[in-house]
Image (cartoon, rainbow, N blue to C red; front, side):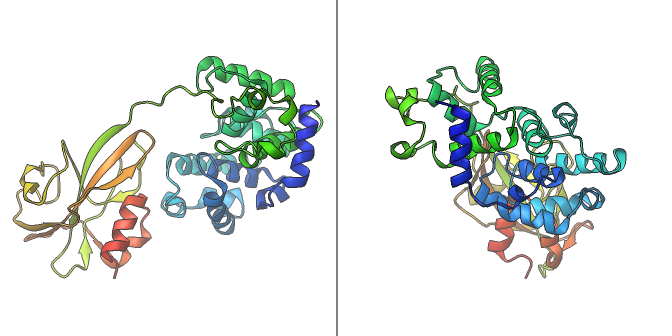
Length: 349
């Protein structure tokens, strides 16, 4: 069976209509690929459309403020993608006069662009036969060829890249790469794949050896860490001003805004506020009244962390000088955890 011809034919019949598939413009392809990293298409599509509308060229994105970029990205998570996107746009616009890198090797020089993204852009936009390997590709190849090497092991990463490179259609690498990814997303799905109507069924080792639910093999993830967050919602007496701070330390929420944060060693009850270390907060040694907004932890799950969160509503006798109007709070880029609280508490009203 001609593996790549079967896939490209399947793709021509079954591919979804998506806006980035109607162009070869590397800016739009790059934008879509960065947004869709660790994000499903149905979630990422509205963000892609919003970015294209607000930033129709790489110059528009480069000249935007970081706050505007982060605000538009709000809710997608993995905010380093947005910061890298902005940094790379500045590099392309200001250092390369808007000329997009047009080879796999050059594309790898962009912040936030790794093997997969560089391969996708190079093949789709510039017809370079560089094979993509993402979760969908790992799944299709491991099942079809019966490969039991763990896909997230160093050996597996090399093995699957070599195999993908051997299989790519050098005449139409972009279509082939998109075909195998789409096939993995729609046909050879992680759970309940459509094996009964699969054009690769007869020669698929996983199907014939009843290994569909076994492959691909993945090593166990890094242990998830539990943290206890206490956000201090410091309000003026009339609730017209609130203390809101930008995170300057490196991390997933770098440059986003939040309420002052104090971590604790456990989830605190309403009568345990005194256990919080307020030394480095705006209300240290200030007389306050306080109440606990949520008795039950709000649990926010990240890739390697589970955040057990409490929000404390605080009114100090001496209100801090650095604050913002609550009416303006929605203009600031925030983690989704914070934006949901703002909505529920109706803080901007």
